[in-house]
Length: 308
Figure (cartoon, rainbow, N blue to C red):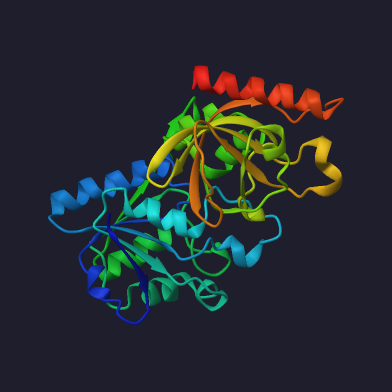
């Protein structure tokens, strides 16, 4: 796992960027197209015999400019953690602010690299930066030509004849197309959260659940029931996961993610667990009774036990 550094913070050594080969992006989801870009930078770094660095921001820039409608594939902490596991030598996150965003493209780059210029930077051809996203590949190349930094702009990786993007993946997740989204991610979609006390109906019905608090910005999955794998205390369990609110409990429930761990016993309140979503089982259903709900949930659990 590579070290995660925050540019400008006490203890940050800007020399990590000097002569490095970098992949630069927001990298929401760290999906297959992002990994392709990072792999290009890593391969280039080996040829140049220098370090490979993933460059990003500490937050998603849209958190400042369109936070109300923003939906993200992962938290900032998970994004940085995932980047650190891509095989790069370091992850450098710039502290993003309105003042930083308001800089002209040239001033943006001068502030970002502060005299410690990479030897090469890899970006997608749609890369934008600087005030009102006025900078693109052409501006990056112009600045690089003056400061001795090569620029490699890449077409977006395509699967099924369409570019892989976080927007495309979010659209699939919101439609319940979890396996297609996972193909584009290059891994299972993951939610990580701390277990909170829930409504306790599951315990009364014979299937206890771990209730996860999912921030609004990270609620990108369609409501429904999923087959998943949950990682708890270093072990992995099959899991039946309910996302959203069952109509049976709509009068006294809030949006949530409830995870039933198969073959697990014990209390895990206030512990962090990770859930990897594998299979769409069914949408939320308006049941005629609690008994019918229990019967269906138990059937879903058995299907997951036998088929996941």
